[in-house]
Image: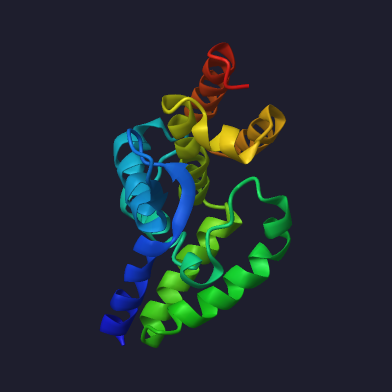
Length: 187
């Protein structure tokens, strides 16, 4: 069962997101995104406003998008898709985590639920990283994803507001990124 699960999640390499890989016209996939978030946690965990368990945070970010195997990646600014996102993701979580033996299924499902709930220090930190990364990508590539999708500045500002649930230094970094994006004409 564990091997079946591991082979199943290989499919995350085919779930395309909207963000482009920097310096490329290729869109990143969900596996690359999760890896990049794990690296962000490793590099930026010292910026958490309260102690966070780094290993636990890395587990959260590695598990957080597994449901996209079935539910697909719902673009952050796809307001129509957001209406059915929770139902799609809950069904996906039940199926995918259910591939594992009971104890592992429960443990990984609990990590996914924790990430979604944003109640622990680790999940707030992980969610802040998840919201910051696309902002960094857009700033670095001239706002390509935002421009192509017709994302309005207020949408980005509203999405960034949730970063304030996490570390204050990351919220400050988000604000600085938004100011820089505005200064270079991305909004």
